[in-house]
Length: 112
Length: 115
Image 1: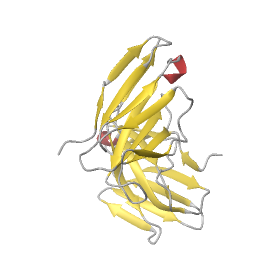
Image 2: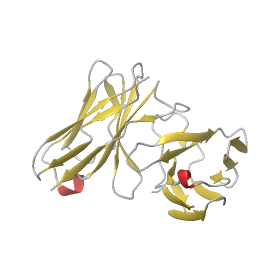
Image 3: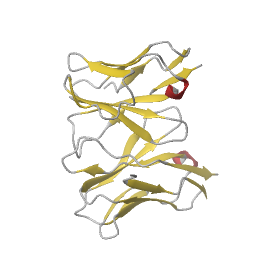
Image 4: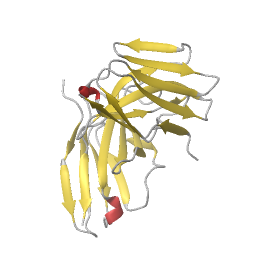
């Protein structure tokens, strides 16, 4: 059973455009919603995270939007840059668990 | 400070051989995780350590896979009698302590190729 559905699998945008990646989940016990960014040949690194007591969190060009009733959260990258080209993973955490549930990843390519 | 390091960075082995992959976590991090990432796939959880104990081994795909952690620091993932389907990037991550809200710090991974 796939607890986390991440979409799209791949995304191509032009420089300056908006990139949007979605993560839908089934488990209402998820209580922490991070996004990780992975460049080729590197391990993933935490990009931004949100707790369910807020609906939106913004850090620079990166924003998480959280919709608790719809059980989904999304990553928005404003003014996308070629340096944002990477694979992005949502990795929600269930309360009481020690292990995040990683989505299958979204490969983002930003054309100059 | 130093991040998570893994060695070797690349390993090519023949089917049936045993391999050992090493992870050096960030000093002071009590929790350590192993994941497997196949080409174009997400991260598959393998095992979680808290200190030297492994409270969750549920992700190990078969009894050919084992891991240990010593001194609350270095961890070794061992794959016996390797198969071609074991080819993947093996990632290690550490956190200050296990559980929610704790950022996972990943190493660069070991790329394993089984011929």
